[in-house]
Amino acid sequence: MDSLRIDKWLWAARFYKTRSLACDEVTKHRIQINGQDVKPAREVKVGDTLTLRKGHVIKTIVVQGISAARGPAPVAQALYEETPESMALRAKQAEQNRLAFEPAHSIENGRPTKRDRRQIEHAWNERWSASTDH
Image (tube, rainbow, N blue to C red; front, top):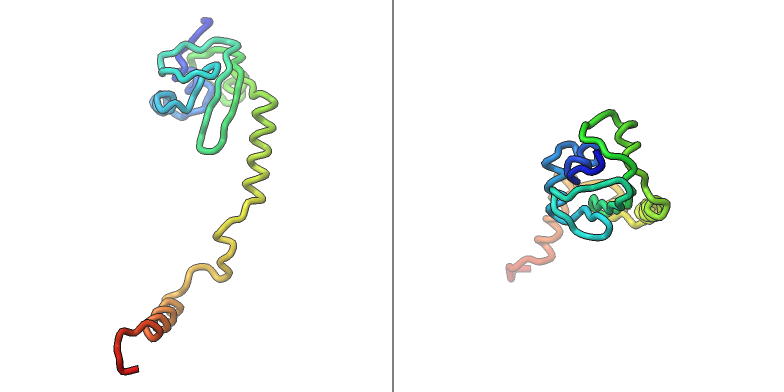
């Protein structure tokens, strides 16, 4: 066997848990072969370069083998090799994400309690009261 449908190959290489998920991702143009958007029936062969996008993570891999059967992870990982440029880019993105400001870190005590909310609402109501008797 020298070629296989891209959705079957992605499933066999364990990028997606089911073949239908792989098919959906290909249809959504999150998978490219040699820089071109493809359909799920497109044949992939040894030596093709795939670009996979999962969220913010972009992987560029080179197909090393073809297998129609989904096997254990070590066998699946032998079907492809990630390019050094892709690994360097992913490491750089991971470092940027690690150093990026996280808004949740600015909250010192977590969410306000029911008592805290009452105090906040009380202070707000007194400050912005519509009554004229103040």
